[in-house]
Length: 306
Image (cartoon, rainbow, N blue to C red; front, side):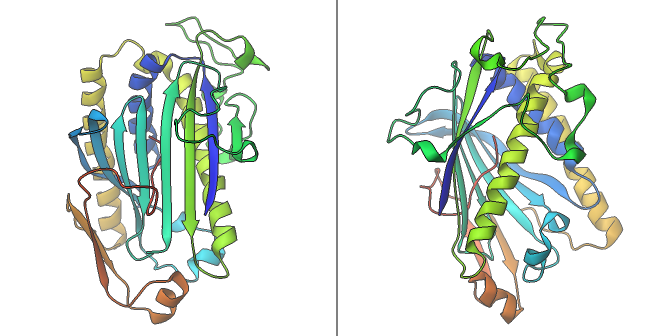
């Protein structure tokens, strides 16, 4: 298992980001959904948890066959999706990613938001993450994939009309006001001999890129969401989820890609290629996961950057 803690600061308050996060995730998911790939929302509803209190539980299917590295495509079925299950007990969230035919694959992301510049060494309250596993990500200077760059989201040129914030300058984390930090403890595991190391590194590289792009967008789009109420952003979320689901399903139908059913409490994938199953640590059968009644411990299939 490979564990890292990412710390991403933003010139926002934790209360502001409660709205900005929901807006950013909805808009980003819609933008990334096309051509039979993207994010389908299966479940999004309130949940009362005995430990964490009231929150929101979501389940999404992320179709991303074309985004796999070439070495992985040799043993992964042509069409597949990753299931993302997230529990949002803001300012604490849990996200898990799973692939039902890969029982040895697991990712879990625990997130805590705080109004500081990333200096809390034990933000999760159990034990500090080893210093060598802590990674500060700078939304201003750290590189992102070239395909994700947009001048309108370049924070060195960004200026908010509504708040007067921006542009950001080098060293901004030491003096910005307000400032908050998104602490994300990410554990991933793919215990398959011969591909474990590079798979786990590949996962972390992609998570890093997603975190950088998403947090940049939340800041760059501030004039679009600042001032919205929680009810307003939930309605925006609902409308974009309908649009996103429609884009994914219509593209799949247009390309002949098999449609997945949309159960709210279970999911299953059938794989019949014995060689693929052996490589992935699976078995030749249809495996079904039932929806847990509460967040699971960091053992299996993991989350997305809520």
